[in-house]
Image 1: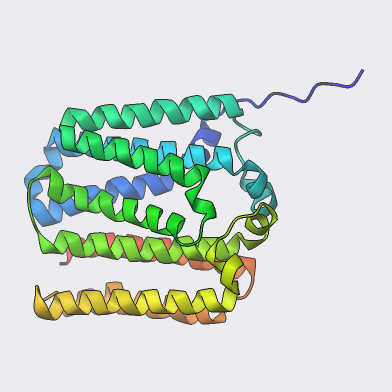
Image 2 (image 1 turned 180 degrees about the vertical axis):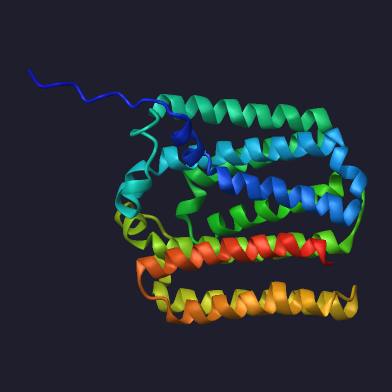
Length: 285
């Protein structure tokens, strides 16, 4: 008699991989840095900021889980060594974890304020819709993730009822870098996405034309920040050189040369580094 396949066993390490622990840490760090350096040092001990960060990370973790749940077949082609759902964690447990984290994130948001609660609910719904449908559509899925990333920074203005332009600058930075990274990830995942009928930008237009779209986005981002610098609020020159122009120039050079799946994987990782540099630059600005 044939043996039944072994049931996936839940491990803490698999849970950390499934929820992208390091990405969640960056989200929390970004919110704390924004509040501490833009609003004031007193925010560090504010329970509302702690709960807001916890709720944002819970919503994001739920989003990562449901995304992997829907993308198992595609991921088995694109990155089989990184698949967790169905291997280390069963599909039923994945759904339960997604539901628990999403509900927890919404509940914690309402503890901070009803507006934050509604934003968290809408964000959780958008992440489910993204995983179920939007990510397979050209540009819409990329914009959704980028918008939610920028929103996580802008929430600090909402929490403290402030209207600081510099916070919106960083939210814009997070939006554009995430948008670029999401499109690069689509280039990396071209084979699996194409196999299962996704309509991402690289599939519709090809790698070369998609690169031109990325060049345009990077140029537009620089124009926006330069316009803010000259017409609204002057930003320190070292911010431009160390945390903006230099990293983006490196990204542009590598993007021009990128051709293989591994190249696009490295570019995606570079975008994470640029995001982290942007967060750390708050200490100087």
